[in-house]
Length: 364
Image 1 (cartoon, helix red, strand yellow):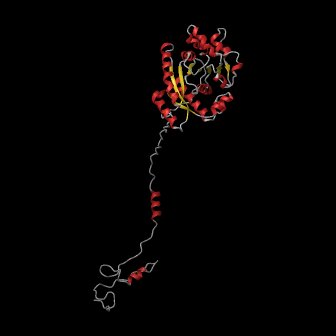
Image 2: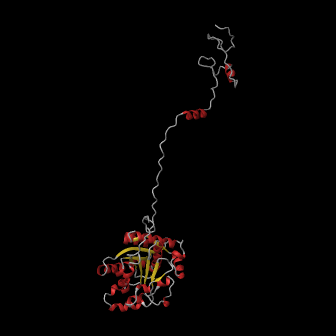
Image 3: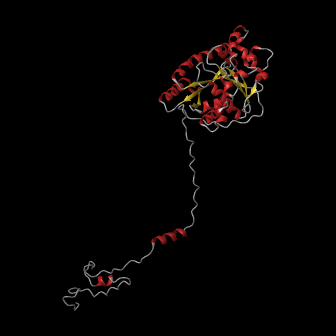
């Protein structure tokens, strides 16, 4: 038994007196705990409490990480993004059109007619600008103005009243050759067979000719070996001149204004093409239907384009020609839009059409 007094903390116990706790060098908490029984252990005695040894865990982990041997990491696999699908104005994905390859030998021309019996749908504009775009790709192009109005000739800067010879003379006079009538244009690689109002008389005079439907085919024969593409601008009717153009052609491009009445008239044109194919020119095919004067801001324009694709399917070109005042300005200037406003959306559209025509029609 210890001889502690009644007021001593260990009075009444048989345990030996515990040595005093050593104070913490940084604080005096150990000393305070040594004199308080409120934090005592289960026996009632004071519990030995000391502050934990401080250490920086971040530095330790960093040291362990450096000490570890390097682990070989597998090379990261780059995610190859799939090409984004672009939906064109026709509602179909736009195809990839490669740049046309250059050619060194010219000849074996494909003859293509721009045909639609409805006027004001862009036949002449398409003939001029498609021909110029094809010439930019190194093709040798001949444009044939087969409309008595002579719009193609005027659109390339010629005065119809100053022509000494026109395609009328080539058709009706045996002593006139095609080289006598062809005139160069301001576009390198593109020539023109001009026309004026005299051609309207040819439709009457050819009625009495033998094989009158093959008259244009006969006079264009020498040019096939000199050019890569021959584009014929037809008059807005389905008369004898248009039948001559279809008989001489390998294919037909149908410019179609994105408007309801223009859409209705295509059925009659298709009937005429089928008759020519059956009776006069078995090789004739429709190369494509081209939407022109398109305005995607209007519901009517979008609905007509949708109906056009439903009726003609993949025959419709992916390229669509939108409305722009630059076409009218280039016509007044007497040159294609590719040279008048070469960076305009209209010029880009006809360059894209040229690539599509080469890829689709000329097996490029």
